[in-house]
Image 1 (cartoon, one colour):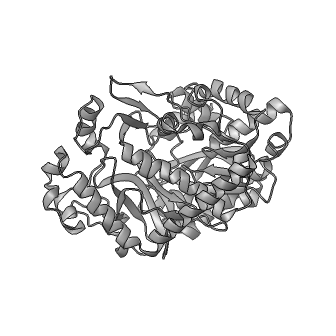
Image 2 (cartoon, rainbow, N blue to C red):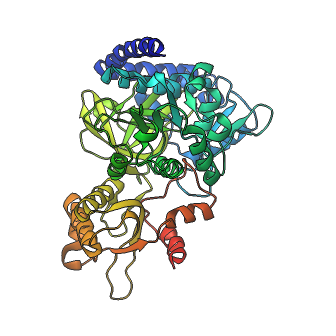
Image 3 (spheres, rainbow, N blue to C red):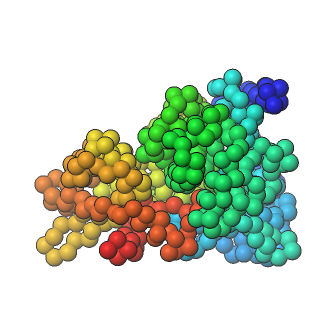
Length: 503
């Protein structure tokens, strides 16, 4: 196995030179992909509708094709689900990644073409290993197995030609045989729907394996880790898996979970690698050891545009291409892909932290913010505040959500939080004060509204009983890696649903 590992590491490092190429010539690479995507789809129904054959530049493309979201593409996708082809993309599409984004009841079915599987998702998977091997040349990950926390949906058959499931389920079903050999547990457990039973079975199946790497959402990885420790009676994961050296994570901000992982894996040598992979595409990889910025991957069959957040509600918003973006400004991401998504707003907001090469950090969601009083609090603000409050009061949080408290009579507005802790703060009122104060420090609009409690009062924070969010997700049939607690909402739906469950 050590020889295989050495060959694999050498092969993976070769790809690093190609990554360096798009880092050096980012605009050329994006222009090349733009032309390739447009010419590929020229004879599709969509391509003919917007006369792709006569589109010569991104400027013409922006003028001709409106910005899309799932609702505008849904009629086309529904026909594709029934087996119609050559609608949005020329090659046969028979796989669909089922995504709910948050806990909304409406499911999205994102088309996954063979090109997006190979040139985007699988390429991203290989690249994260290439980057890891380059940064840690003495690694031994292929001397053991990778523990993959798969999604919560098995592959389902819509008709003779169409299948859907969580993105992870679609990827696992399409993995080459050699990759399957290095993965644990077996597919029947990895794709189980019942998450309570699944955690039990995963723990049982992997305890005896030589696990060298883990990939999964932090929240569910912690649940699994606790189950493993409970079953084995061990103190930490290194006592169960002594060769564990890599954890690949994504989907939520890792910073609030870092302390828990240090306790679960007490090793300064443990390598943490963040990815930005969604049903719609694979967008970013943490390429530097000492930085949590994500390198924007530019040669995955995706053409990027960026919409300044202040233009979100504009009737004719003006998107920017890669060469027009600025540092530390909030943008919504618009993508055109080799899966047939055209000028599609994925719902995430990012900031550029570097322009050479292009590195980003995820700041939130276009719909997940609180702006009931002009305070414009985004997830990035909330997570900075909650992390600082935890650090200064010895707390470890598990999950949270927040929403506005609207003006009522003479009362000013405010924010209402529900926070569930793994470890309680040593002073709850101090926790609330630090949360509030940090929000004031990182968000000048919030600070202005908090001035003398004129528009916003001190936050109202509920200390939720253990498993509150787990029980809420379960009640909605939303347990699983794809389903996340919405951190912020500009209305009260989530909080008003959860509060009665806490009594």
